[in-house]
Image (cartoon, rainbow, N blue to C red; front, side, top):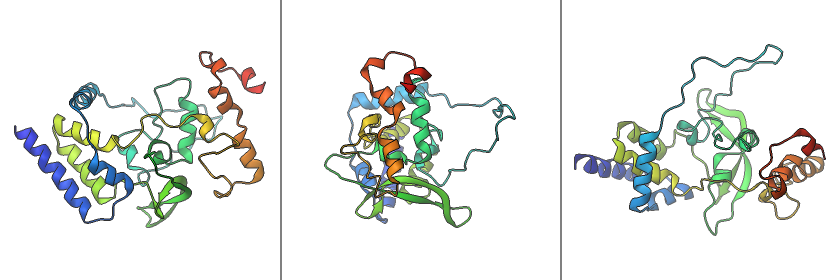
Length: 243
């Protein structure tokens, strides 16, 4: 009983905090998110089975390659507060290619697709909180009503939810998890949604790509290979990509 009361208090505090700040479309959908008992129970089971990733020691490669520390992305999407910077890990076939996109696409560009909403996709420079100036890191972000539809962990409501997560018991965490993820799509778009000459989801010319760059994106051989049903169950081989 105490856990249920605590959950209601925490969620009410989060919604109250959000009401005093301009909300994005995503945050509006977070407030309106609903789910059934089955979804709640499945989320509880998922959280019970979750084990955080732990690295035994820093990874090291041969000194033949120039080694650099991963970019500090604490000012990026709040998603990486829980997910890793390179979050695509389930499919051995697709994960490397998908994680390449993390360098220039915000999470919301692929996983936030509300019905009957047309986004304007633009380059967005994240705020470098530590230095108090725009970061060199830029990503393509969906814009809605002239505002970037992506949030960092420093946003008041996001910060409140993450703080509540740390203080919450299992049931309250399950509700927070559902609120955060219900407006999102688990699977991103297929390759040919963007890598195509017709009706691409992204306006590459408006994004500043050259004619040669646009052609390379549209005719990307790897995306065509991964989209080809004839190769669906086959391992990727270099010769296939060179055909």
